[in-house]
Amino acid sequence: MHDDASPARTAANDCKEPGVLAPVIDRNRCEGKADCARVCPYDVFEIGVLPKPQRSELALGGRIKSFFHGWKQAFAVRAQQCHACGLCVAACPEHAIKLARPRTP
Ligand code: SF4
Image (cartoon, rainbow, N blue to C red; front, side):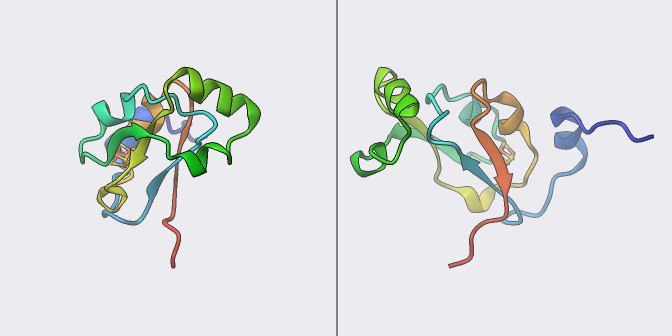
Protein backbone atom coordinates (compact mmCIF):
# COMPACT_ATOMS: atom_id res chain seq x y z
CA MET A 1 0.00 0.00 0.00
CA HIS A 2 1.30 3.46 -0.88
CA ASP A 3 1.61 6.36 1.54
CA ASP A 4 -0.49 9.37 0.79
CA ALA A 5 1.79 12.04 -0.61
CA SER A 6 1.73 14.83 1.96
CA PRO A 7 2.53 18.30 0.62
CA ALA A 8 5.86 18.25 2.44
CA ARG A 9 6.79 14.92 0.89
CA THR A 10 5.68 16.19 -2.49
CA ALA A 11 7.81 19.25 -2.01
CA ALA A 12 10.86 17.21 -1.15
CA ASN A 13 10.61 14.58 -3.85
CA ASP A 14 8.64 15.74 -6.81
CA CYS A 15 9.96 19.10 -7.97
CA LYS A 16 9.57 19.45 -11.70
CA GLU A 17 11.12 21.45 -14.45
CA PRO A 18 9.84 25.03 -14.41
CA GLY A 19 6.73 25.67 -16.45
CA VAL A 20 5.22 22.17 -16.26
CA LEU A 21 2.74 23.21 -13.58
CA ALA A 22 1.78 26.61 -12.24
CA PRO A 23 -0.23 27.87 -9.29
CA VAL A 24 -3.89 28.66 -9.84
CA ILE A 25 -5.36 30.95 -7.20
CA ASP A 26 -9.01 30.73 -6.23
CA ARG A 27 -10.04 34.40 -6.14
CA ASN A 28 -13.00 33.59 -3.91
CA ARG A 29 -10.71 32.14 -1.25
CA CYS A 30 -7.52 34.22 -1.36
CA GLU A 31 -7.16 36.75 1.47
CA GLY A 32 -3.71 38.01 0.53
CA LYS A 33 -2.09 36.68 3.68
CA ALA A 34 1.16 36.16 1.73
CA ASP A 35 2.11 32.75 3.13
CA CYS A 36 2.60 31.61 -0.46
CA ALA A 37 4.97 34.47 -1.18
CA ARG A 38 6.95 33.70 1.98
CA VAL A 39 7.41 29.99 1.28
CA CYS A 40 7.95 29.97 -2.50
CA PRO A 41 11.63 29.31 -3.22
CA TYR A 42 11.26 30.75 -6.73
CA ASP A 43 9.64 34.10 -5.92
CA VAL A 44 6.57 33.31 -8.01
CA PHE A 45 4.09 35.42 -6.01
CA GLU A 46 3.45 39.05 -5.32
CA ILE A 47 0.66 40.45 -3.19
CA GLY A 48 -1.43 43.10 -4.86
CA VAL A 49 -4.92 44.53 -5.09
CA LEU A 50 -7.53 42.73 -7.14
CA PRO A 51 -8.43 44.96 -10.11
CA LYS A 52 -12.00 46.29 -10.13
CA PRO A 53 -13.17 44.32 -13.17
CA GLN A 54 -12.21 41.05 -11.46
CA ARG A 55 -14.03 41.98 -8.25
CA SER A 56 -17.40 41.72 -9.96
CA GLU A 57 -16.54 38.18 -11.06
CA LEU A 58 -16.33 37.00 -7.44
CA ALA A 59 -19.15 35.14 -5.75
CA LEU A 60 -20.96 37.15 -3.08
CA GLY A 61 -19.03 35.47 -0.26
CA GLY A 62 -15.73 36.07 -2.02
CA ARG A 63 -16.60 39.73 -2.61
CA ILE A 64 -17.46 40.29 1.04
CA LYS A 65 -14.32 38.52 2.23
CA SER A 66 -12.08 40.31 -0.23
CA PHE A 67 -13.64 43.69 0.59
CA PHE A 68 -12.80 43.24 4.27
CA HIS A 69 -9.21 42.39 3.32
CA GLY A 70 -8.81 45.51 1.20
CA TRP A 71 -9.05 43.42 -1.99
CA LYS A 72 -5.54 42.14 -1.26
CA GLN A 73 -4.76 38.93 -3.09
CA ALA A 74 -1.79 36.85 -4.24
CA PHE A 75 -0.79 36.93 -7.89
CA ALA A 76 1.46 34.39 -9.57
CA VAL A 77 3.37 37.04 -11.47
CA ARG A 78 6.27 34.70 -12.26
CA ALA A 79 4.24 31.51 -12.75
CA GLN A 80 6.70 30.27 -15.39
CA GLN A 81 9.27 29.94 -12.58
CA CYS A 82 7.10 27.44 -10.68
CA HIS A 83 8.87 24.12 -10.01
CA ALA A 84 5.71 22.48 -8.62
CA CYS A 85 7.22 21.89 -5.19
CA GLY A 86 3.80 22.27 -3.56
CA LEU A 87 4.95 24.48 -0.69
CA CYS A 88 2.47 27.23 -1.50
CA VAL A 89 -0.41 24.75 -1.68
CA ALA A 90 0.45 23.46 1.79
CA ALA A 91 1.09 26.92 3.25
CA CYS A 92 -2.10 28.66 2.17
CA PRO A 93 -4.43 28.85 5.19
CA GLU A 94 -7.40 29.45 2.88
CA HIS A 95 -6.72 26.43 0.64
CA ALA A 96 -6.81 28.83 -2.27
CA ILE A 97 -3.97 27.42 -4.37
CA LYS A 98 -3.85 24.45 -6.70
CA LEU A 99 -1.24 23.47 -9.24
CA ALA A 100 -2.31 22.95 -12.82
CA ARG A 101 -0.84 22.85 -16.27
CA PRO A 102 -0.54 26.37 -17.63
CA ARG A 103 -3.17 27.22 -20.21
CA THR A 104 -1.94 27.36 -23.77
CA PRO A 105 -2.94 30.47 -25.70
S1 SF4 B 1 4.59 25.06 -6.16
FE1 SF4 B 1 6.54 25.73 -5.22
S2 SF4 B 1 7.64 26.79 -6.87
FE2 SF4 B 1 5.49 26.63 -7.51
S3 SF4 B 1 4.58 28.57 -6.86
FE3 SF4 B 1 4.21 27.08 -5.23
S4 SF4 B 1 5.92 27.36 -3.79
FE4 SF4 B 1 6.51 28.36 -5.72
